[in-house]
Length: 570
Image (cartoon, rainbow, N blue to C red; front, side, top):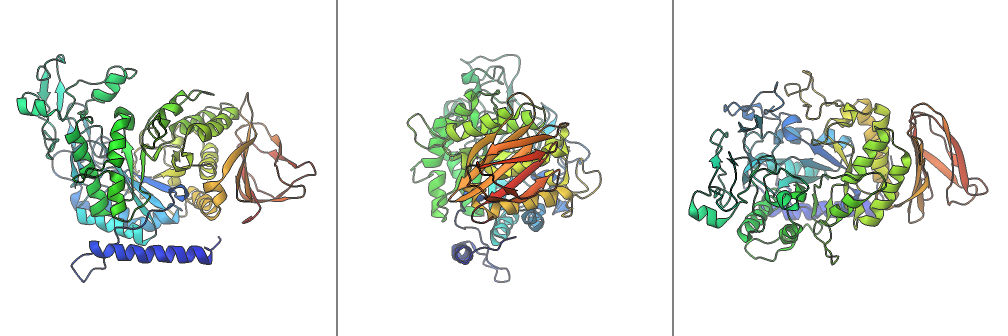
C-alpha cells in the first residue's frame, strides 16, 4: 500500500488544522471533553468511497433507547424497530474505515412516525418524518449525532445525511372518494398513528383541510394516493403510498425545508445530502433549495459555505432504469442536475441506469455490449458523471446476492470501483448479506443471532483491497473510460481502458459461467509496454506485455476479472 506524497500529507495536515480552528465555535463548554470537530472543508467528492448505513439495522450502541414502549419495537419483525442507533455507527467508525470507506451515509435520523396502522408498517427506516429538526428518540440525541460527526471528521471521514423533501409520514388519508374542489370531503385523520397523529413542527402541523385557515395555508397537496405513475401531475402532486405530499411550490414550505436542513449542516456538521424521492418534486424546487438567496432561510449551498464547505454535495434519488441500448430515463435524470439552459440544479443523482444494466449483465446474463453502451452513454448524457454515486444494491432494491452469485458480486465491485462515479457499499455487503434490511448486530432483525462485524471476512478484505487500489490511483477517480472489447450477443468479455494524465488502467471481466474465452484488444499503448496486474478475481493475475501492434491477448476463465496499470504509479 502506497503512502501519501509529502505534498498530500501537508494538504491533509493543513485541512485538519483548519477543521480544528472551525471547530472552536462548535466546541463544548465542558473543558473535560475535547472540542467537537463539526465543520471541515469539503473533500473532492469524486475521490470518495461511501458506506451506506440503514441505522436501525446496523449497530445498537445504546440499548436504553430501543423500545419507546409504544408497540413499535420488535427485532423479530421486519416492519418494526430493531434498535440500531447513532451511537452504534460511532462505535464502528474504525470498522467502516478499515473497509476503505471515506464517507458514511446514514438514513434520515429525524423524528419519525413510528407505526402506521393504515399499512401495518413502521418508520424505523427514517423516511416518515413528523419533525425535520429533531433526532428520533430511537436514534439517540443531538449530542450523539454531533459526537458521531466529530469522530468521523477526526478520522478523516465525512458525513452524508439522507433527507426527504417530498412528504412527511402518513397522518391523513382520503377514504371513500376524493373531491378536488373540496379537499375536506373524504379527508380523515390517521388517529392510530404512533407516536403522534400529526407532525409536531410548524408549518407542517397545518395538515387539516377541514380548518379553513390550514386549508388556505396550502402546506400540503390535498390529494389521494398516486394511482398512475405515468401521469406527471399525480407523480408530483399526489401521495406516494399514502405519505402526505408537501406543496413544494409553496414559498412557506420551501423556506421551512431550507431552514430545517440547513440546521443539520450548522448544528451537526453534515457534509452532504442524499435526497429521497427527488422525482416526485419539481426540478424548480431544487434550484430554490440549493441556491435561494433568502437571508432568513438561505439555500443549502450558502449555508454550507458559511461553515467552510465550498463543495457541499447533494445527490437525489430518481429510481428509473433504461432498457438495453436506450437512454430515455437517463436523460430524465439529467434534468434534475441541469436545466434546459444548462444551469446547475442538483450536483448529482444516483446512477440508477448503471445499476439496472449491471443487474442485467451480471445477474440476468445479458450481453456485455449493453454495459459497454451504458458506460459510454453515461459519459455523454450526464454533465457530472464523476459525482454520481454508483452501487450494486441498497435498501430499496434488495441485495445483489439475493439473486446474483458471489462471482457476479465481485465483478460488480471491480466495476464500480474502477468506473467514473462515487462507489457506494451498502452495509452488510462486505459480510455477504442476502437479507435486504437484515441487522449487523446480534439482537436485530435477520441477524441470525450473531454479530457481523468480521474484518477477516473474505468480502471485507476483497473490498478493502479494491478501495485501496482506487484511492491510491487517480486514474480510477478522474480517468476517462474507453471500451476496448465487448460481446454483443451473449455473456462474455468486457474490456475498457481508463486514462488520466499519463496513467492507464485496463479492466477486463468475463461474465460467462461456462466457457473459457480469450480477450484480444488494442491497448493504445506503445509496443513492449508492461501492464502490471494489480487485482484478479477467479484466477491468479499476471503482468502483460503489449505486442508490436499495440495489442494484448490473454485467456479468460469464467467469471474472472482483472485490473492492470501502466505508466506512473503502476
